[in-house]
Length: 370
Image 1 (cartoon, rainbow, N blue to C red):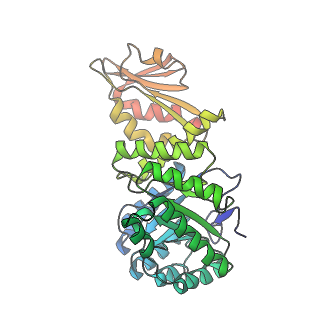
Image 2: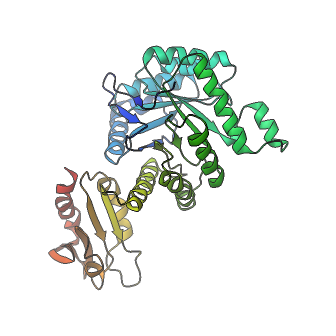
Image 3: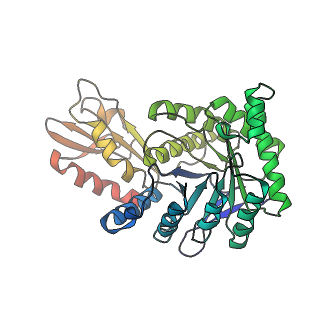
């Protein structure tokens, strides 16, 4: 019997994250660059830890790193000792790297049955993970299926959705054989339709209580990727499918977190649930603009998504329609004639010099961040 709730972290200094059953859907992302030892030293190390802390403030619960070799395992292990966010080691091909990661406070291991090798390799990872109390994610991708299933899909004998399901079923049997029940499963495709279909099947037909990590793999650049992630993840989450999500993008980790949070917010709004955190109202800008909404919004995104209390923030381009169109906003900012205007619920509360805009806006926002 697999666990219906998986605890990730919660040992040493790593804060716990619970996924599954009635726990909130957890947002995660994956680091974009190769981690090297010098990243952990001096000012670079301080900046790295600060950025990870900022991701946590923005609503990121889990952070995954690719670990292609033993040197990377050592570096990630060191980083895990420097941060409180649960870190996940993403392992392909070599099970010994996964075993080495488990010597450190790594909170979760992801292995891909399509390339991890024979059953005995998985068994060795499970034995050590079980002794450490560390969960393992079965991470399947349509592009890296087990060789025999890949051959069948290439020959047209089965579709990729069926191949993904069969691969997960196989791995479930291995985990059951070795009495490992601390498992999360994911099956991803770059096709939104295949992603939706395979996760519906996993939820219904396999182990409906096993926590599911959902996402669209290789979803593309920012705009295309957000659209494709939204199409798949909004559909699944609205049906109650998915316990943790990643909005995969060819873009920054911060934008992945923001995209995932906005998808979750849209699902909550559809269900009529009480909305938490920030809702940003930002005009697209036109020839009337006297305030650079694009630059201001971009600069303030990390701080805005760090708001703990419900707040609607409006960033408007001109005074003609700005405050009036954003009467519902708790706080707002716009510009006029070289001045910056701060407003609440459509009423201007302060007119300041533009160079003071950041300081005054931060003061206005502070009560929602604490």
